[in-house]
Image (cartoon, rainbow, N blue to C red; front, side, top):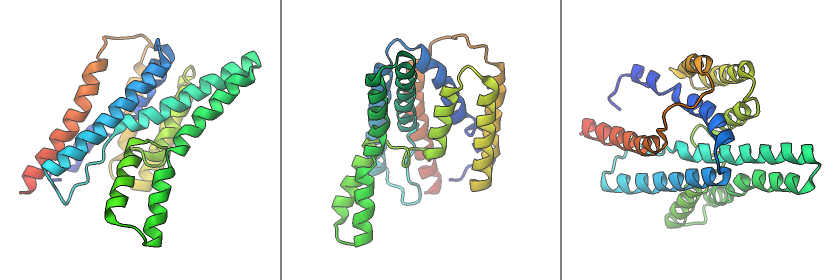
Length: 234
């Protein structure tokens, strides 16, 4: 609100670039389940933080719903599922296949509060308080449909992990997602393709560790932009 549209050019490549790097970081992390827990806690923290900020500084024009951590959490669940599938096929282990199925089902089960909320709205037989409670629970239970970027970005993250060792296919995935986003939403969505530049230049080696910085920077800059937009509108 009140910011030139070209500013959004800086934000479009970030999401696919972070998903690209998540493919490597998840592969090399010492604890994949710890990685997933960390993202879930970050998602909860972001949800609670934005909930509090919007009540302390209300703005009827802007809906503060950004939470990339929830998207990364869902993608990480499916990346873990893919690992179990590969291990199960390689070792001919039905137990690993079963684990993969359970993990793949988890984000789908997280959709139940959202489905119930939609049903109650369509039936017109519920109070606003119950709907708000279900909406809040839905935000605490990330699912492939309601997370930031939606199913399209979840699929992109999964494919970037599956083809982690094939840069050409990864690039093709980002190009297809960029094209779909552009024709669906228009605007500067084409700038997603700018993520291809660092992807092509990436040498696969670990740089300096800024993990904690990004966990802090992401919510901070979202809240700062919300507060700035609110002040500019007054």
